[in-house]
Length: 307
Image (cartoon, rainbow, N blue to C red; front, side, top):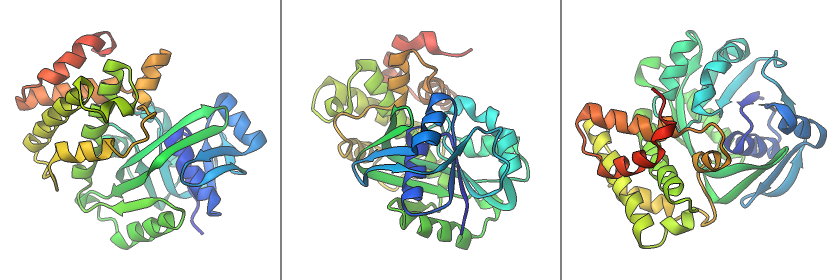
């Protein structure tokens, strides 16, 4: 039976670990602080619109305490923390271990891969509303739980291995797609979450406000149009109109949901605004894309830009 390791037991990692544990899969969670202690004492408390409420007895430890090997490693930390997990990835990987980063920022898989040569680092993304709702407690809202991952052509990973893992994950209640163009699919997710997070943070509203006609939805549409042009100039071939796609996804979200970047900004915590706002603007600049909507958002949050 495959052993799973989830690095970062926040909203995304906690949901993945919870669904795996509910299906009886061997899974270990990497967490820290009071969140870790609560999981150790009471189990992982999953409150899920898809699965109901459960206290799940999962293995949990700090990165320093983990000395086992895993078959599949999900990296679910924030983009600004990936450099801190290099030693863990090397220590936990076997020659055939697959590392699946599930981050919001485009290009994370190759970035991690360069830092841990010899480790099979794929790339991936996820569509889900999940968040830490208390110490040791993860809430999953709505009916969307879609995981996409894949190998880059030059990696030479056997697709049979990718498909077998996907089938196992599907049996746990996740919708899983093995991508034939993971660069395309991670860009599509980046563009969506960038528009979603920037809109929510700019107006300080939940997604229900984006689902209604008006200036909030118009900002989301403007950001989606500009990121679509960036994608096209980057060589991304979209399977459908990207603005229509973004609207379709946003309209399926729970109206009370918000992006993690928005939550972090509101709490004064470190956030992914560099990767979701400023990196998009920087790429657009390099490609000569006019970005009036992104500039509106940039002006409000300029104090967060890293030099």
